Length: 143
Figure 1 (cartoon, rainbow, N blue to C red):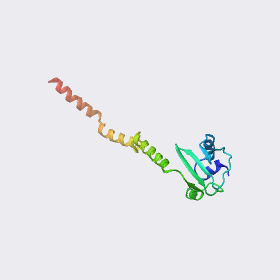
Figure 2 (cartoon, one colour):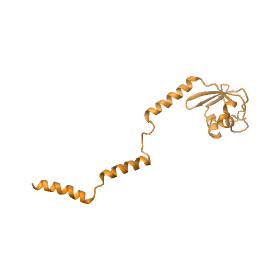
Figure 3 (cartoon, rainbow, N blue to C red):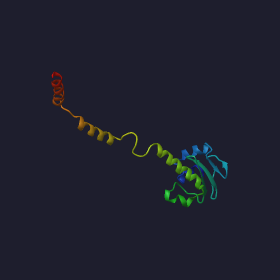
Figure 4 (cartoon, rainbow, N blue to C red):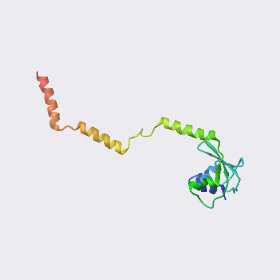
């Protein structure tokens, strides 16, 4: 099976064209050598994939006939990625949360409506209320 199709079948990439683009960018190697999309992979090959600034290493256990479900992926590949790589990924996720935590930032429509309801209840004054307000000021100025 072609390497781009294999990476798509085992759900490493969302589409086959994305897998092919990543292979063209020399982010995928088989046995330490950079390959083309047309490279045929076989059982026992060791793939090194650079994705999200992490170096993944997987060993092919079985070749699927077509795209498989996520639960079946461990039957077809063995993850040999170093634990330090996953630690790097975890640290990157934590650092991204530092800048913007969930619920902060731009308000949603619901937040906007709640704010409008809150402010409109307090600031709603009828014309008579304004007249009353200014009449008190005029009375105090006349004294």
